Length: 248
Image 1 (cartoon, one colour):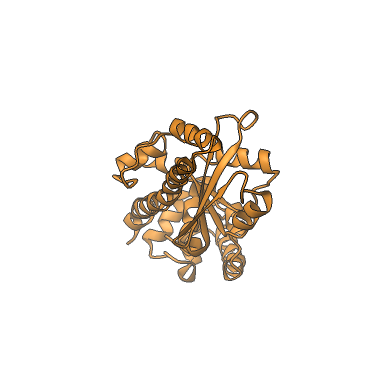
Image 2 (cartoon, helix red, strand yellow):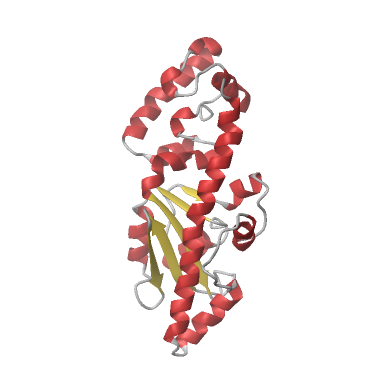
């Protein structure tokens, strides 16, 4: 599903009105016919389409993140897929007040890189990666990853951020990332490591075990790459449920 299929950002347009438009063949902004809605709503939709078309041409993902309901932010993905950055962090504990970030993996356009504490994990490196994306994707990142990075590196997250945990719950995919991976039969190349193991691996690396860092990085990168597979599944499923089944 693409942004241009959506009318729900418009004031006064809820799911019922949007689906009514789709059922009547108005499935794209170019097909909008004001006769299916009242004149005031029609004027607002036409005004939104004019503004949004310009913003889409300019690649302004921030505009759409502010206009769409938070629960519908997944609709931005298809348009901004080429410059979507999937990210995941590893830490020494659960509280950003008493623990630190050890690695940050970022996956974009088929490539994955990992920044490591004490090496290349810096505020400037993170800003280049996060600010340079059109869309950020994490799993439980708004409650965990983002606060850690904001606190430790004095960052502000201005790039639109899709937290996959919430659309997963919408589809009945509950629990942590590993539980969702298991439900969708997404593998990790035979790795059987938990978050607690990741903490121990970091401390082993600090004690001089270089191999422990290699394992930790591989684990973190699986976390990050698998987010793309999950989001593809989520968007395909929601496309069918939210959009396709309401077409004429």
